[in-house]
Length: 185
Image (cartoon, rainbow, N blue to C red; front, top):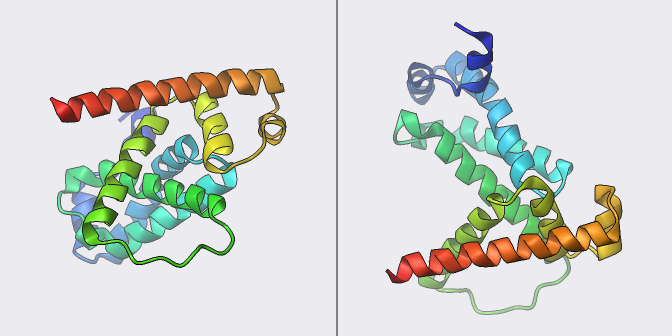
């Protein structure tokens, strides 16, 4: 088999099934084989390399601990993508909300479900952006960095950062508009 194909494919269904049955060698091989893909997801979704590494590690820990919860062996990539996406969103929100949060009444299950749905839709729209636009948008709008700090961190001029940010915001807004239109139809 071509080594490039082996490097880009996810672990096979037989390995996943063995891991789900509790085979410790299969679990180790599954986590190891999933690692490059999970890292790639994390680096494409998270704002900083450190957040990406942390999110990838957290996702692999979840894979190790909860492989038995995966319902279909063919759904590993989608399951891991959701875990990484959620971890990146959680990390971005944590950075934004550092400091004491005001006390409030706990949201209802319905409110929590709607918030998760909305966060997922926004995360998908952001994930669809080119990486240069995605990084600028996350650093400015999610993490709250100043324009100068964002430009410096990315090694670009402030004008280039503003241009990318404008394009990213417009693309996300257009993507959310299409999603809203799809839900109405």
